[in-house]
Image 1 (tube, rainbow, N blue to C red):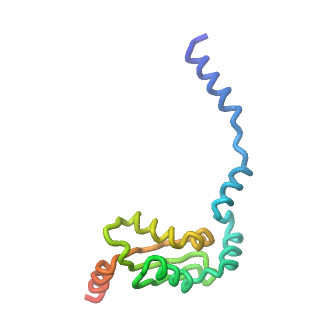
Image 2: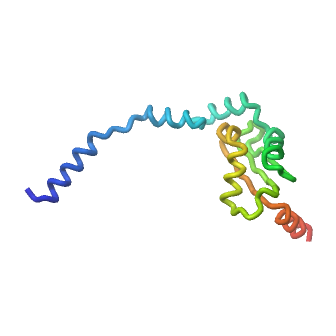
Image 3: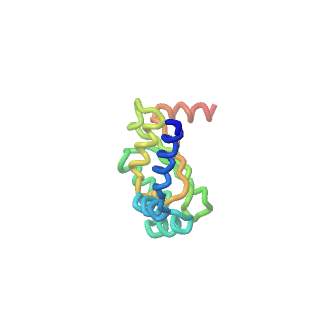
Length: 135
């Protein structure tokens, strides 16, 4: 037998012994706190009492946010939010680092909702943006 065929057969035999259990995926998804369905997410959000004002309070407390605007895009069910966050803690951080900072501050809330879109600005960037919009 050709050596490459033997190797191919050994590999295929090794991989056929691997079985992915769907229940293990479910268990790992639930262990992270993420909801699998919209209904589960709604139940978690309702139980956690997630509102734009509660998220604003958390951001002001944890990030010393000077300005926050959180809009519920889901029609009141509390599953999709669009946010503008202005904090001096965003100085010298790129967009990814800013989002990670916000996501860590709102870890429990984000796990319970379906969609989260933050826009993060430093106070100087926000003033510049406001002056451009007013001009």
